[in-house]
Length: 292
Image 1: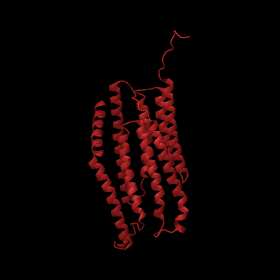
Image 2: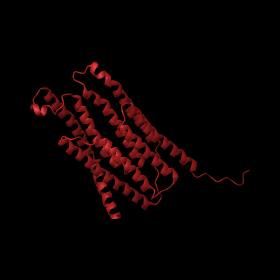
Image 3: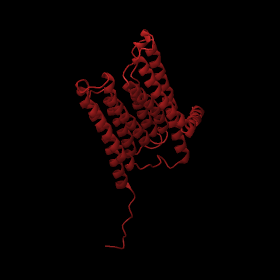
Image 4: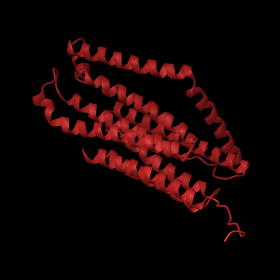
């Protein structure tokens, strides 16, 4: 078991180094730009009937679909980055999950424009604007709350034993590799189902469901190295916040943004309480018996 964990940890380090290399990030940026421009060209071509009728019926004619596709691809890449943050710290992983959720809200806000005809007219888009504004405002509020969340973070080793710390990091990397495999499997299954003309599994909802299970697994793994109350409470509180975030993904308009913000504020509150608890239990100087 230890040997398998070590091998998966090394695989994680290799993949992470390749992913975070500057050349890879430039390629990702170039792919996003190319996808956006190519989608625009395809849509414009379909508006001018240059494709066969059977194909044209399958392709969009609304230019805002290019925005939706580019945002979806961006979210996929951000999901990969989330996997790598899992090995850094629990708080970093939770913060990354809220980052992705805020981008999902922005995507929902822009997606409302894909249901209208061009040129856009207020009589058609007016009913969708309140929902779009609610999603955008929710994303902005989470963005602000995340700034406070990251500012409050106090990273401390889970154990003072260097070998145990190495073992815990290797365990987190193993979980991250398994998550990556799971995400690829879900994405491949979705592509297969869509190609067959069947309904695919909602990708991001499935991803967050798996992340909840991974968060709980990490809480249980951490108990092997530290069972102190404040650490267990913080990690469990973060797991509860991700559960509410998962519920927000399938909630109706207005509720989704509010529930997502509430989940972020819960994580922020857990962090503030954890920091206050650390101060309360920090060693204090013993009283001087020579003083009355």
